[in-house]
Length: 251
Ligand code: NAD
Image (tube, rainbow, N blue to C red; front, side):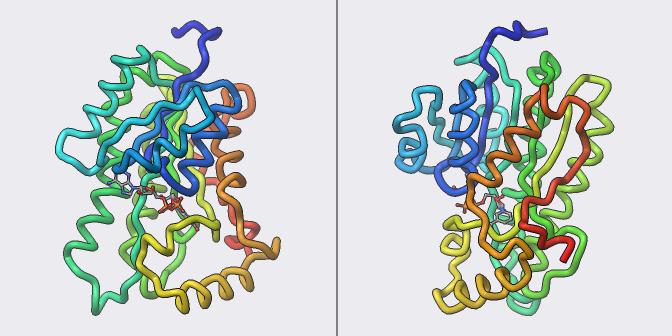
């Protein structure tokens, strides 16, 4: 068992932008030591700027052998890992008729394979815990999503992994949870390559279907992740996929 007086060691993937950046900063604000992973050094450095508890680690989570290398690097530098936040993700909306094999493979590699290999590599350290895995999903897993079926399927898979790992890893003292953000103001639509017109139409639709009547902030999701990972706040919570969506999932 780790010494509880140590600050917790948190690893956040995809932390150069959006929800990952806000999550890294929220953990750091609570006194955690945070390693942030992303493909480009510059956005990671921006995430860390002014937050001495945050250390960047440049890596592509889909690279061959990279998940194990990332976990090894964290353990070599810090000797522990308490929270793994599988946040890196790619979305890309195309109807089935137009979807490319490359899109399918990239989304599966980023949204399903990488979180699985990271979780696998982290198991030993998380079991020293109490360790937590937080997967960043989307509320679409239970419904159909016209024009975005592959992304929806990868997040449905992540929800399923969350539930299965929660049961499988409970005997090792590892909790596994997920958040399912609704419409959140991040650069994700730019990363999807959506035109300004399509982004505006999507926002209009999302606002009309969000009972709280606003788009979420990355900090809204970060706060939920920090609470779910907190052993004091959530010690008896595992296997849950928590919507953070202004009520969209129930509207
Ligand atoms: P984002 O595009 O800003 O964040 C995703 C991050 O993951 C980016 O920094 C990207 O560079 C990184 N990433 C992608 N592939 C990677 C790889 N191979 N290796 C390392 N890093 C990689 O968008 P976001 O909204 O902050 O998304 C964060 C998570 O939230 C994603 O999993 C996304 O699916 C999920 N999500 C977002 C929303 C939303 O409305 N913004 C809604 C539901 C779910």
